[in-house]
Length: 328
Image (cartoon, rainbow, N blue to C red):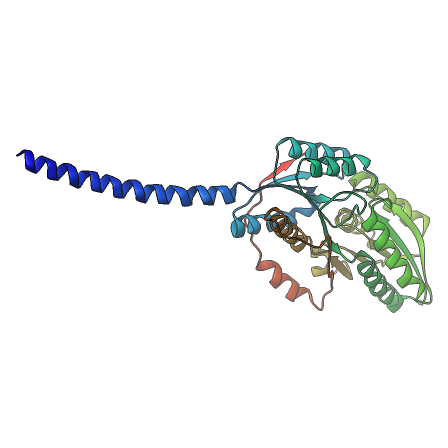
């Protein structure tokens, strides 16, 4: 009887040992996975960039990261600075946002993040003098130039002379200046076309409406509009529907639905989705000790009726999961 008990004890000891080894091995690998998942990013942007948020679902799925999406219903440098400061306090592993040129506070916060060992990736608009780790964005000058050539050609189809209006967010923002310069250069090369007015809308719905209505009243010969950012692109479509008696050709940014229904001649796709995804990848490489380039320029695509279907097919291939945003 005693002998049988000893044999059972030995068997149970061996079994428990095997189980401990198995679960210890499994727990080790689980912890390794959790360690990988502990890479936390914060993405801070205007809500107009919702499409970029989808890139982080793909990034989180591919790399096991965890990304907090912080969005603003209007352009707010102060709000973005506060969200940036909160991300530093939370000791995240990386921050992705856009460079706001008239925000000295953002440059200071980027320096503070660098001192805390938190790398920062800027997309869409750069702050080259800050201590950001990488900038990923479009060639804004080239995109503005191509938009200018398209708009000038479309206007001239209807009239031998063209008076164009431009709406920016803020001319102090680098990407807006670059787009405007490219647009101006394209217009200068086109005989019979002139820029009648450039207005700032500050990415604010009411301001954009007021500036656009004022522009339409001041220039009854206005027959073309270049909208250098997404907010004015969306809002202008609504306003022009009230002016159906005027033929105005429009080229804007990102809101391809207006190309689909024929309201706009084209929109520039600034490729925010790829900018955001690549920014996350670059920060991961940096965190793993790899060297990365400081500036990466991506091609923007000018979406017209001719290439709209191909563009929409590309959009359909992206993750359609609903993003969870922290909205301010």
